Length: 312
Image (cartoon, rainbow, N blue to C red; front, side):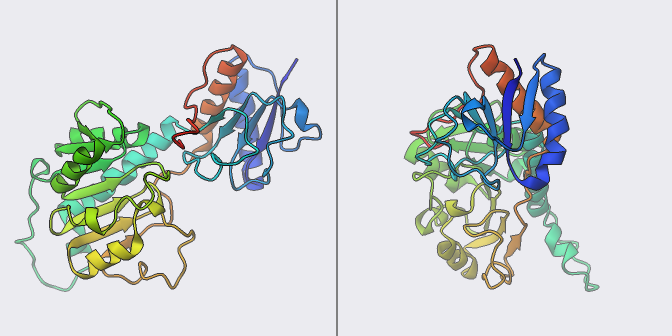
């Protein structure tokens, strides 16, 4: 009998994902009945889900073995009282590579002072603006999950001293790993460039506030491709206005799209990018989804299962 899979994502993604999911499942010996509608919700075995799709109530899907998210973040679904099925977040090679490239690019941009030259093509020969070598530019990573560890290791491979912080103890090659309140303070004090890659939970909401921004070295750069509400916007804007923080490059925001009137758009010390740091790539995402379906059908543990109590 075919494994019954519901694609509950954005309608625009259906024609892209359908052939990729069928192919990835077939490569694992799985025969699937894939559809973007569910005339009989109780007959669905797996739900491929994105919050941008139409599905809002998981209650009727009484036989579903798992909900497989197409997004890395699960804060918009993890607290849903109708969701009783196991929930798996998206972690795949495309997300890791995309995030690593975006983070590395912007860390190098700030480290090399490229804005000074790119934004000031004014005939002035600024030959004194020579950056230090990477080994003299400490970088901090808040969040040592799959994305944070990958980005931190790439930066360490370029010679940056990287300190990483997580709420619970973790280890990652080439990264000086810290945890707990003291570890957070130490990571902030060291980082001339600070990258935020934490999940959004009640514990991390507003983590980078005035008190913690004050721990960063004078003129430090903040880079946030993680979640917008990790930062208290008013506190960051104040620190930027005072020059306490040298620059902020932000890819995620509390409200998206970022409203045209938001002060970030016009601030001379802020770079806005439109939530593009690491989009889900259909080819690699389909492989990750198919692998979890295969594991579920074989009675093996799902990959990247969300801990409801922790929120990710």
